[in-house]
Image (cartoon, rainbow, N blue to C red):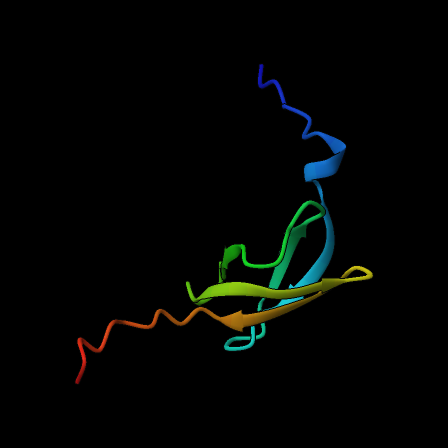
Length: 71
């Protein structure tokens, strides 16, 4: 017998967002905040949450800037 664990209400996905690279639909948890990182299940791209407003989530490809060491 398999017991299913119910997720708390605040963790369930409240909306869908699309990956800007492959257009895969992503489940976005209701407690997501600006600056958090999501991974696309379709292409593996890491996406940063740029804005959360009225259930709309703006995602952008995560860019990591390296140090230039004065060059």
